[in-house]
Length: 92
Image (cartoon, rainbow, N blue to C red):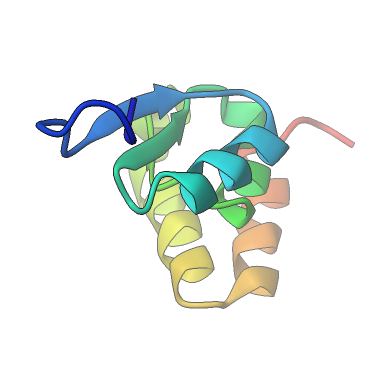
């Protein structure tokens, strides 16, 4: 779509496969905004380039979810991982 519709300037894609997230981001020249909706995969998907998410966890622990998002954005991966595993991720 990004190559064939000249008036397309943005598309939302909600995917559950990390490799697809990275692939779409690389091939659409910024015209797609990859997103995801599964709380258990939030941290992993952020690492693969998700820019948006719809998250039930954000309704319960909004500050923690925001911190994960911001820490990944800022390259503070270990801090993001710690919050995810402590508060939001699936039990070990």
